[in-house]
Image (cartoon, each protein chain N blue to C red):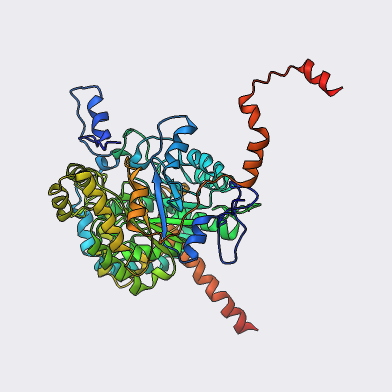
Amino acid sequence: MIARQLDENPAGIHLPLDPLPGHSSRGRLERVLRRGEFAVTTELNPPDSADPEDVYNRAKIFDGWVDAINAVDASGANCHMSSVGICALLTRMGYAPIMQIACRDRNRIAIQGDVLGGAAMGVANMLCLTGDGVQAGDQPGAKPVFDLDCMSLLETCRIMRDNGKFLSGRKLTTPPQIFLGAAINPFAPPYDFRPHRLGKKIAAGAQFVQSQYCFDVPMFRTYMQKVRDLGYHEKCFILCGVGPLASAKTAKWIRSNVPGIHIPDAVIKRLEGAQDQKKEGKQLCIDIINEVKEIPGVSGVHVMAYRQEEYVAEIVDESGVLKGRQPWKREIRRDDQLVANRLDHILHDEITETQVDMVKTAH
Amino acid sequence: MSEKQPAVTQATLVKKAAPKSDYKPADVSPQRRVQRSFAVRLWSVRHSRLLEWFYSRFADAFLLLHPLWKGIGYGRVEAPIKFVEKRVKGFMFDCRMCGQCVLSSTGMSCPMNCPKQLRNGPCGGVRANGNCEVEPDMPCVWVKAWEGSRNMVHGDKILDVQKPVDQSLRETSAWLRVTAQAAAAREAAQKPQNNGASA
């Protein structure tokens, strides 16, 4: 008999967990964080296809290495499969997705509907974002919506969850049980406002935050010092964003073309000096993880390995952040095994039953 | 899987593929085409303390005139007041007439000039030089707001979480709304005292 995994509903992997006191969601990520374990989250590269297998294959390489998977909402304003769609597929398979909601594409009516729909599908974590401007993506002629901003979106979700009401005050029959997240970017000006902005997000409802790519650890350390002085690290879980750089050329490209990512010259120099730049990029990511995990107040890492998803497992393994813990992994359960043993033959035997035959055998 | 980032952004490719013609409008957002210069807007932020002082006097004066507005009828004075408000605030702050002014909470830098119309602080895309992600030559509205708020007495109001914009209030007078609300609050505050005195 296979032992049941920690944080898995015995009645089925796709079902929410039992509610725990003090928890606002019934998901795994909140449990991991509240137990004080170092959490690892990652990002699923959204497919440009209508094939569910694409999502499943991309999620499979994270099995047993991450606590939650971000389902991005048209990141960089590029069109991809929607985060709601990805979440629908992932929850079916028992994964713990973090549904990203960007304010760029939908107004408050659509967003509140998606929050309810997502929560009904079993999404336990939602990440409220403003979203990149439409000029950055593949459809610069689109109408930028930005009806809410990340802060009012957080507040809207919190009101829906805690007060059981829409923004308009209309009542919900069942409020969504969600763990609310937000994004932080300590690496963009105005630097001295950034910690206060985290405080605003906490006031609006953020329970965990994921940071933008961190390549400048001293800068992150200064930010965290300020956050600790203000006491915000006790009110919310801070996950530091990290990721491997493929080469010095990519790093330079990202620096000049992707808004909000700060890459110091030292990083580029280190990559340029390496024999195998890709390997060095991975090593750099591991080194950064090892540095940030020691910073007090950091509760986890968010590994963003865009188009290098196969490295996530290696990065998590080699940095040793899990300390021997194994996050949830899809495993064959006892009843699956039973079903397989009993009914395996229907997969292989050529049984052609006609209705006439069925009637005969019934008599 | 090999990591091949394109040398140009997707947006550039899309732009290049667009049909060519002789008419080439300025390569900025439609919002930005309305307003080209930031000189006055930046002056207002630099003098946020002065404007804060002036604004509070001005609000008091408007509140004193409440009986007058009420006498004429708020509905009737709206058109002329809105005409003046739109032009004055448009000149000073590049006002967008959202009808729910938060200038005093945002260091006298109008948040509606942000291409994402953020009302709660800067997005994560601010460039290292403090300019906007969408408009590379425009100083970020929120970087300026933070600078402006540091000069102000009640600058910490920038830390309050603002409600989402009520789009149904666009193109209405924020001055009259604030005055009417302040008058109503004053009356509500006076009522229990009167009741207490009579009882």
